[in-house]
Image (cartoon, rainbow, N blue to C red; front, side, top):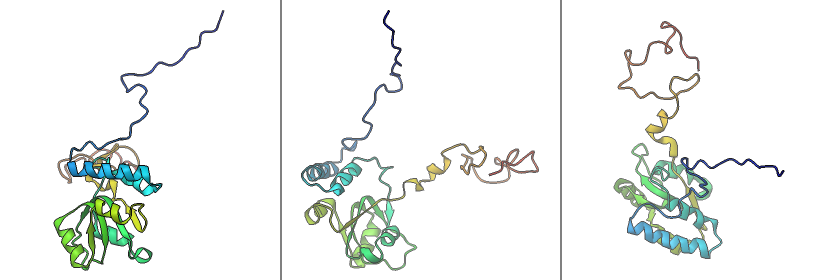
Length: 196
C-alpha cells in the first residue's frame, strides 16, 4: 500500500510556528516616541536610505536594547575623520565626570541627561532631536550611527554557571569575603580549585 509519511508535530506549548519575533511597533505608549515612529516609518518607506530603516527598528527596541552612551564614548568614536558629522544614538546620552574638557560635538539622541546637555552646549556643540535630524539629513548623510555597550549592565556578569570550569561568572552572594563561597572548589586547601 502507499507508504505513510511520518512528520514531526509542532510543539504548541513552546510557541508553535513562531516566525516573526521582532517588534513591528514600540511597546511604549509615549506619544512623542510614537510620533517619531510615524515619521521614520514614512522616511524608511519613501527613501532608499538604510539609515532610516535601522533607526526605525531601534525606535521599537526595549530599554535594555537601547543602552545609554556617555559623552566620552561618543567623542572617542567621533575623533579624527568624523569631524563635523552628527553622532546619532537611539538612546540616552549621559555625562562622564572623568572627562575634563568635553570636545565640540553634534549629537542627535532620544534623550540627554541634564548634565550631559549642559556640557555639550557649553563646549559649543549641539543637542539634536530626531525630528530635527529628519529635516537636516533625511537620508542620514553626514551622520555616524552609534550604539551604547549592551552588555555593560551589572546583571550580565551573572549570566551563566559560576561553578563551571573556565567560567568567570559572578555568583549571586551577599558580599565578597572569606566566609562566602570560598570553600571546596574555590581554593586548593579545601579539596580542589576549579582551574580556569
